[in-house]
Amino acid sequence: MERQMPEAKDAALIRDIAAFLSSREKGSWQLRRVVSRDKSEGFEAVFHARAADGRQLAVKQCAHPRKTINEYHALQRLAESSGESLRAFALDPQSRFFAMEWVDAPLVKQMMHEPNRLELIQAAGRWLRRLHDRTWRTTPLRDPAMEGALLIDPQGSCFRELDRRLARRRRRLGIRRSGHALLHTDYHIGNIFAGPNGLIPFDPTARRRGMPVFDLADFLTVLMVYRHHAAFQGRPWPDSRAVDRREFLKGYGRFSWPQRRLMGFAQDLKIARMWHHHAKLRTLTPLQKAEHELLDAEMRRRGLLPKALSAAG
Image 1 (cartoon, rainbow, N blue to C red):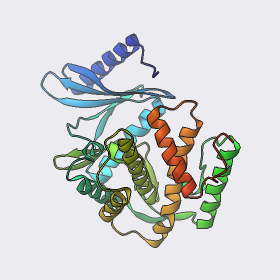
Image 2: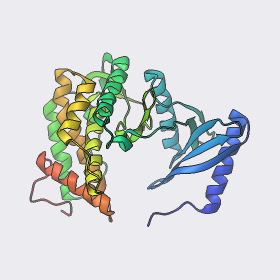
Image 3: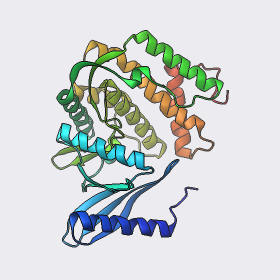
């Protein structure tokens, strides 16, 4: 069962947020919790704040001060660079939470049964291309994804073998430096509002410059997972994975030969990290189990896991 934040601590946090907003934005503010998650580092939540004069804000409480600071500055940088993303503007002095624009619009994820679903997926590709084009630099950059750790704490023979396979694939690419762009770092249909005047992405995890294909791999992999979720829950999406991929890449447009070489590895890495996260959990909900089975099948299809080896190894 998911833990709940103690009621007294929750009430104290709400009072602190209301006082912070009153000092920064003036007026009295009422808050209600709209999202709540229990993370390994602590609780994470999003509040809707409404002032007496009708002004509205969103306030995000992160699980750890370091995460609060990273997300706040990443969102600021994204808005400065794209001009088309949600804006953050006030950080708690203790780095417990930050305030940002309130957007009253559905997520793109919630629109996948609508007639315009493919147009939205294509628009997501166009938005990402604009971000990468506006922030592209040809000065070579060392990208941690091409040189740093691949899996976090790969304990167990199966996990170590996966780490070795990924490392071999990375070495074969022979790429250490590349042109680079600002990355969203967590770009998927659950982090994009379908606003009346266009898409409004949010929730980057860090300020990072790197190879654009890693944003594309994030989007396509999570899109595949969300399609699987919908089918598991008895509400399958129209079309197919291949159509989803085609429309997103159509929106993004052509990319260079070095980026095409990297695309397969970027998707290998994203799928492997998601699989590794699930494989380390002691218990899984039915939905998490279905997701893990999908990722396991993808890992074997992509040659990242031998058929005879299990995560228990």
